[in-house]
Image (tube, rainbow, N blue to C red):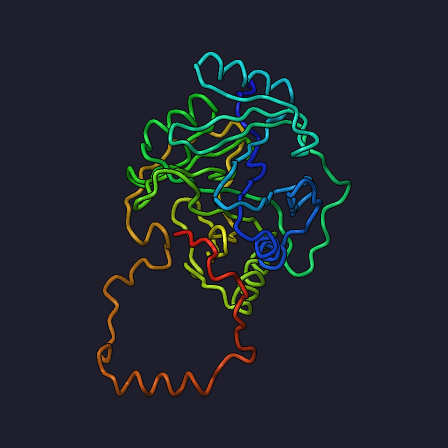
Amino acid sequence: MERTLRPERLGYLSFLVRDIKISTEFFEKLGHLEVSEERDGKVFLRGGMQHHWIVLQESDNPGLERVAMEMGSRKELDAMEERLKSQGIKYESGDGFEADRVSQYLRFNDPAGNPLELYSDMVSYPMPPQPRYVSLEDIQHLVLFVDDIFSCHDFYTQVLGLRTSDWNEHNTVFMNFRNGWHHGLGIGAGRTEKQGISHLCFLPTDMDDVMRARAAVMRAGLPITSDILRHGASGSFGFYFAGPDVPVEFSVGARRFAEDEEHTPRRLIRTPTVSDVFQVGLEELELSFQDNPDAWSDIESVAGLRKANVPPKTYQAAEDSQKVGS
């Protein structure tokens, strides 16, 4: 079967952050990454043998700086450059070895204005980092906000070669890279957002690591924005929490497509049970004492007698840290 031209995987994300010390601590202690290098005002963090999955740089205008996708070879990167030219897409090309630790890159925007990069040959390490608490397999996916989901879907599938996995009605579409995970990239309409990042997801090695990551977030006192759920589209099991720069998901169990697997994308109904199949059958659940203050007083009293052994501590983030919606 002829090898189709498309990115191998989500390579890394680069963020402009308000306080680089806080953001670095967040990704080290709660993202379970390791600082691989600091140079020219940037902090690079890795979770695998690649030089980095996350790049941080301090700025008065925080936000997503770049979504970088890895091409399989320099030859494929050159072929993608010819495709961008033929489509009339403006791009920047260059040698990113010194500044960003990749040999060659192409940088351009999607139709919504989200900044993208295709690159080849990132610097790597001979060994993965030694996990202190949670083992990670990869930076698995992100979801971007877009203003026109149909034109952006055409761009990602027809120009960049991603394959469509599933739709959530007309609100969100999930697409996969060559590595086959149900979605390496999702795009969707925000409540008010026209571009930017909804969340990123790290892939732990197993469910125990998901739960250890969750325990660390609870210990630190950060808000868990969506607790233990299983997604109907991908089948993944995990949770979401908020950080100073971006919401983060840890999940395992997502569907993975083979390179030559035939798949017809589904158009799933947009209901809470698609986001979390554990909610199926609970729509009509009610308690007879739902509005009884005496009952809730008793429940709160019992809860107070059975506190967790380790009370949560407040994570010391700057008061003016950027708030990002999930």
